[in-house]
Image 1 (cartoon, rainbow, N blue to C red):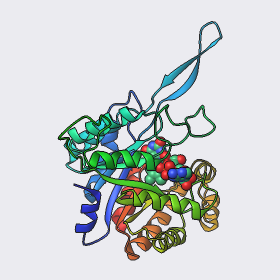
Image 2: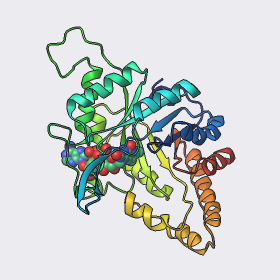
Image 3: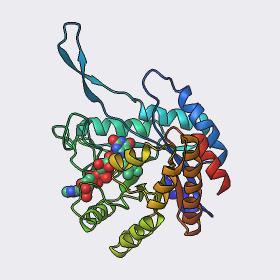
Length: 316
Ligand code: FAD
């Protein structure tokens, strides 16, 4: 079922989760162990992130270095199908521009349809570890909006081989990313919102946001979106803080701010266990306020802390 159908049929705020594919070599049971405690909340859908290959330099026995390609977390599409099969829940695979030619993108989308997946979150992806800025594949997509056009084309039965006749029209429900604190490459919020509106005008069915720790920023973002005519559902993305290290890692990695009230409380903690308690309280406070404000879905980035998230969702 499509994310937008879940939202339109809901009587109350829905719950959804985001997970990562297991590290290569771990096996899917590691992911099931992560998901098991979350399933009692009957999530409407589960997002599975996509992780592109990286180039790394491996030292040879003679001391020289060899450039090799590694993919640490493969399997997004098949994990989505496995989750649907095991838990009977809808899934949303993330699909990125980086590392894909347009032909590979088309094949990936066809595979998703064969697997019975109705949703896709369309993203550009970040620069590869060895790049200073995002580089599309030769002939690949430069922006999420270009990838979105390809998905919308398939939804209209337009494949890359234009001589194909009587083609099947896919029916993907498409989500895109939004940034309450601005995407880090955008020169300003106004420009970023203009490109977000472009994605919606091209057919995006809903927006899911980057994590934020200050609900006021989310509400201001929603207001700005509505003012420029973005009328699709906007789903807040939420993440718990659980270690002191995150005070610097989260802003560095995700280009977001942490409110002083939260960072001060974390700094006062003696152990990471204490930080978990502060993080859980903060997440609960955010969740309750957003639910009261009538958000369609509370979407949790569960990364490594399913039990913490489960305890918060239980108390909402
Ligand atoms: P875009 O929409 O292409 O925007 C990127 C930048 O370009 C922005 O600054 C925007 O303002 C600008 N821009 C947009 N369109 C145009 C245009 N037509 N012309 C000029 N400028 C333009 N990354 C992964 O690799 N795997 C994942 O699974 C993943 N999941 C994510 C889930 C969520 C909810 C979010 C918020 C992010 C996720 N990311 C993931 C990270 C994401 O790929 C990065 O944030 C990336 O830098 C931008 O992706 P985007 O889809 O927002 O790009």
